[in-house]
Amino acid sequence: MKRLLPLLACAAFGIARVAQGAAAAPAAESSVDAALAAAKREQRPLLLDFQAQWCYSCYYMATHVLSGAKWQPLKQRVHLTEVDADSPDGAAWMKKLAIKALPSYVVLKADGSELGRIVAEQPPEKFYAALKKILAGHDAIDALMEKAKSGAPADIAAVLASLEARDELQAGLDWYGTLPEAQRKLADNDAQVTLWRDRLRMEAAAKGHENSACVSAAQHVLARDIGCDRYYVMEQLLTCSEKMADAQRKAILAKQQAPLEALLDKQVLIAAPQCADQRTAVFAAAELAKALGDKAAESAVLDRAIAFVRKQLGDNYAQDRNLADNLRVYLVRAGRDAELDALMPKLMAAYPDDYVYAYRYGRTLLERNQPAEALKYLDQAAAKTFGVNRLIVAQLRVKALLALKRRGDAEKVAADALAANGPWFPEEAEKLKKLLES
Image 1 (tube, one colour):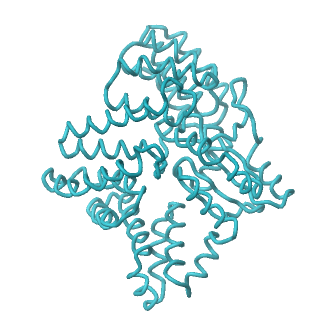
Image 2 (cartoon, rainbow, N blue to C red):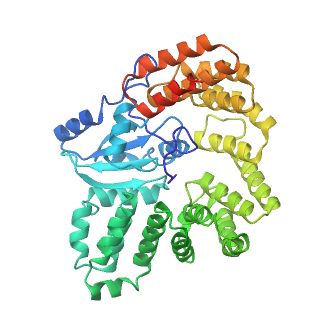
Image 3 (cartoon, rainbow, N blue to C red):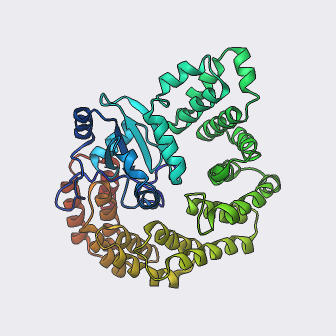
């Protein structure tokens, strides 16, 4: 799912599973540096798969895309390394490569220079085509830019798309402005070029809090047939339009309801979906209905999504973690607490080897002001945490213990987590310390 990265939110972080003390995740590679050295020895490019235990989109990719007979030939062409963004090594490389969303797939040469990247979950055919293009040397940004100087509009569109994936928004717009006037005039009449130019404008305006420009660019993008990207752009439009006058905002948003519903009907909530990210599509539709004041439509899309997932899963929550986690968040979003309470123990049983569902349920119970019950699950989660999630779970345990008037135990939890953490993740460490200052 192509979103900015909230820690332990509904999106995702990585799995190179670098060992982090007693509760570390299993190590597939000791570090990205070690993987680069191995790729150099093997004379193969390095494919970094940035993911996390709490990343529902990552589980979709692992089970539906990076698996099976069609994946194997591509896998043999690269040195594949899973990178856990919750680990110090993963977090450092996320920063170094400016990874803005999970899952992300970055292909590096053995010297560490980037060949290209793919951001967010994709259906197999789209992901394979993009990876083949990168491995053929067609997505190295410098080469793309050089070719586009005298190339066709398709080459220009490829440059803009690559810079958008790298979050180099203003750089893309600035580069486009440097093209010769005649070439730029030709490109201005090309549908793919103008689509990516407007997406760069939209995202740059959003980042700069230029809401009017963001809304205008988003409307230009949404006027086209952009397929599964519609719900990502819709999310941006909803955010950028929040401060508009209510009547004006509703007039703009109302035009988007029918196209988004059609996308759900034809490409998302179907047995063989064409769009990989079901969750964002459903949430975008629910948020759009909420913004329009249409409570019936908001409830209807969530109820429909819940029924769809339940039909797909039956009682076997272990068969598809992506869908199982979608069910969880749909129930949360719909406020169906009794059903959520029944589901969470089943998810913990289906996925017993990580901390995620014990953590999530403990957090939910703490938010409901049930610290004693929450602590049971948070303690269970803590035994399996590592990296930054060790600190985040510790924060919740401390909150629960303080609510129960157990300051001594809270201080011990914080001290143990900080000692295990060492110098890493200073912002989360500071949050943990501050909880004990009151």
